Length: 189
View 1 (cartoon, rainbow, N blue to C red):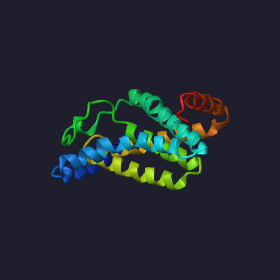
View 2: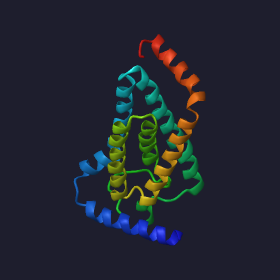
View 3: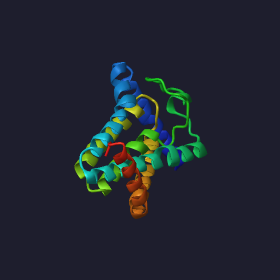
View 4: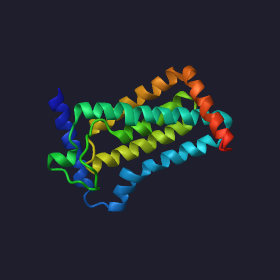
């Protein structure tokens, strides 16, 4: 089963990588590397949108933190899968350090925010971020940074993180209120 998944992963990455070799570097860099930097901006705008949205922004932030530096990092260190460009036959279209590939940190973070917003009732914004996540993920596969199964792993990690944050919403209310109190003292909430 794993061999079939690895073979399919390799074929998809190889096909997309060959397709995108001639695409402009700036296009690949923007979508695979820089588009994710709009996430903090979206959370900041959400923070200033309304009083209710502040807690929703915090939920999204907490889900992303749980998904990326905690869960995805732990799983990545345990599995330690090489990136496609390290294995051979795949060109590295944008520079990336040769760290673990599975699961995708980018997918984990962006989809965690998307799922968290969905659970919080912000469905339109959630869908917009979900589409952004699909675009980023597609370009990360095409540029040889990830396999499709890395993206799928990141999405599963994201869903788990967003679900856990939603599940523990009541106990986390204390943390949300504490953070809001601090930000109100410095006039940022």
